[in-house]
Image 1 (tube, rainbow, N blue to C red):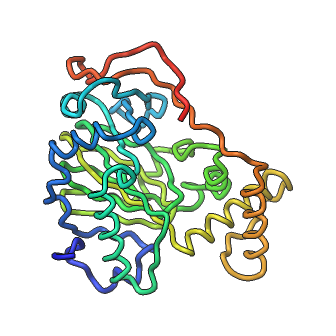
Image 2: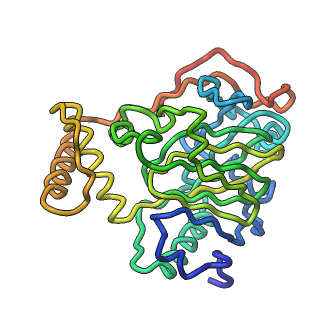
Length: 314
């Protein structure tokens, strides 16, 4: 595999992986895979179902300003021009599904982690690339899989919060797992920042935080290119099953005090209950419906032009 992707690895990282925040170094930012030419090609290859394009108010935590748009007929170069000079955030999702070199990169990254972290076995891996305008925000939210954020170009400030009440109530996590709310529909208060870990992420650095840790991101006054990876382990899958079952018990049985233990007889009963419900078809996953309100326009002041709102189902 050549030179190690993970730089300045410390032995203790293997002990705390998945339990504590790791802020360390990588060499992926030197790869041609993140050049303008490579990104433009990737944008043009991306199926409609494999990208999210947003704009937002960059002043304050205004979640209501988070709106979705489309690339339309613009070329990859035109999309980059709009992002570089505008107010846009583009996520290219699951790029390993439609470009083999990123699939190899994803495999190489986790091969190294599995070599360095005792007992680590990952599955359901995911790789996305984020290209965003100066000052862009990603508002407070929580994710279900294990998360890592890899910085390639520009810099951003990352706020990471404890994955527990009041920052992430157990009932809110359960609703995310059950697709009853979106990841970003959890409560945020400005005073939460007093309890956040705050990192200034630079090119050649990555960040891995505790499972489900709520976080938000503020770009510096520069274009940002980042990569996110997601993964599951057997322990993460157990946590998912427990939260799934607890959410059902809270909703249908009115129970309030629910254990999040992932071992013992109680856990296995919940795991069986969750599996039976999930695969019974009783709760079918709703179609992903997007409200599209703008299209990329590199000549417009913020990199986009408004269009009549339309619903897109993917």
